[in-house]
Amino acid sequence: MSCNDEYVVRREYLASSVATGAVDVLATPYMIMFMEVTASKCVEKLLPEGFITVGIGVNIRHKNPAPYGTKVGVRVELLEQKGRVLVFRVIASLGGIVIGEGTHERYIIEKKRFEEKVLRMLKSVKNV
Image 1 (cartoon, rainbow, N blue to C red):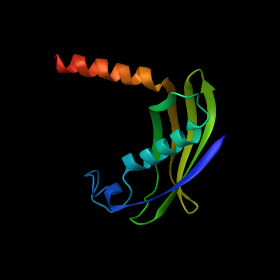
Image 2 (tube, rainbow, N blue to C red):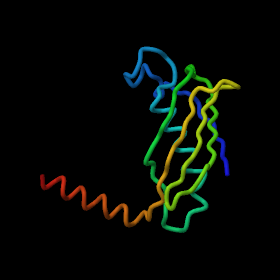
Image 3 (cartoon, one colour):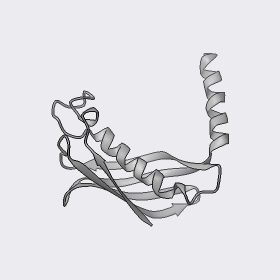
Image 4 (cartoon, helix red, strand yellow):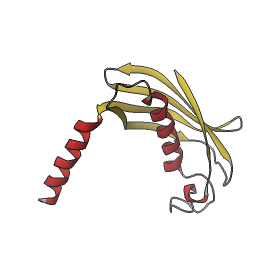
């Protein structure tokens, strides 16, 4: 299974806007976000009701710049499922140039149970 999406490199996605660099190109954290969002959307309709995926790992190389205003294409391919772990190959490109690639892992969870866990953790942090 594979999915594709496109994202415009807006001002708030620039390295110069998020203090990760001094140039007007796509910042690495946003490139990774595009990959995660595309992977999440790719499988969401296949999950049982009440289940979602959360990102648990990335191994990404940012290889080339994507200037402000350009359209970045993202392709994700589900390589394997190991129990509740989904492993994706992810590629971001600008025209025919790969700007980033690697793997991304997502974990299938029951949304309600996860939200309950978050509330428990919040209570314990507030008590510290």
